Length: 202
Image (cartoon, rainbow, N blue to C red; front, side, top):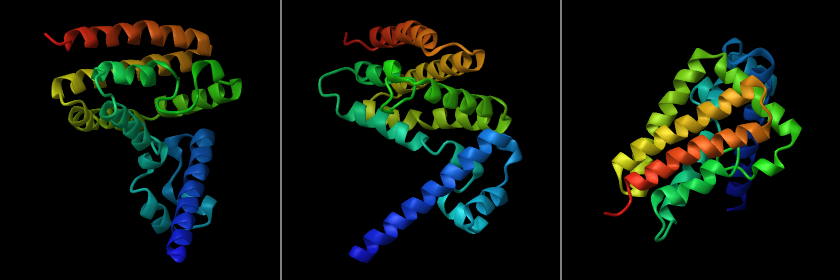
């Protein structure tokens, strides 16, 4: 058992090293200019090792998205008597990073600048923009299962896309966190209000 635990820890450490090196390369050189071979060289592993952990280069960029989906579906499953929309509202409005312990008030200049660099990297890559849309579409089914409503899930994905676009635009325009927060809380808040009304018990 102890040997298995050590192996799992080493696998997790290797995975994190690959992700960390890839992140630095993407930020410095742009996603389209970085190859799996360059990532492998930076980590001092083979390309096969990289692809054992990440099937595609895009998976490295969107490494955190499965955790975001887990947080959303977990909130829906644990909502008790609350509506599906009410269950997601704190996650969607409470932080610039979905499902991350980083409230708006706690966003440091360094964190905001890192987010801005990441947003620019995504915006400059047609591959990443296409993958972002595909990821959001892929969330409809698990959100529908957790909420018990495919129509609600389809509209909730639209709200998440709106949130992403507002955040991305604010980051790229150089808007400070307080301004982006107001935009997200107002516009996305209105979208959530409409979603709540549309699926209120009749």
